[in-house]
Image (cartoon, rainbow, N blue to C red; front, side):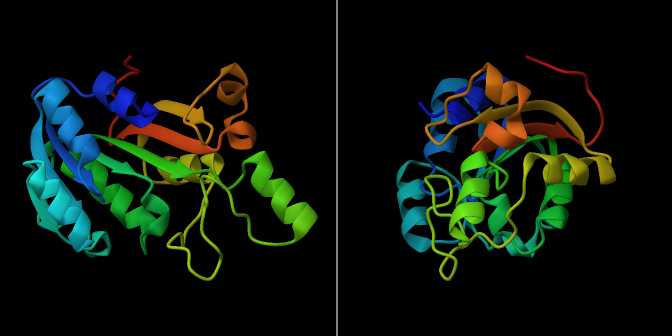
Length: 203
């Protein structure tokens, strides 16, 4: 089981209302329904993935995330989840604010552009990096707003968003003590749990 699935299962209480943004084939939402008895919706734009998610028995809304979350009322979900999609939307800041408006808490993962391999790739080769976390070429990548741990935390601070938990992992979604101490340098993928107002750290 992926680390983001493990953390979602750990952080999301049973019977919570969950909104999964860019849910893909619905793997995470189906897992949470089976393990935590959550209810909710997934949002996806690609038709083949929507078909697979519906086949899992999930409630799926076909929508481009660039349209925002205006259809949902404030605090209408306990958790809003988005894995590896923040860097692919047109206005990450607006979507982030929408997430903490619609959800009591949000869980987000994204590739860290400040990882040491990325820095080395740029420095030594002078080309846009290609890696397990960033597998696309510069001309066909969906990643239009790449950022780092520090960039994301600066954005949260500017908008009054509270960081409850932060985890740095590698491409295989494994973490260690050094990644925890130096996430911006050693973390290949960032995982954050956030809320609009401070609620105290939770395990």
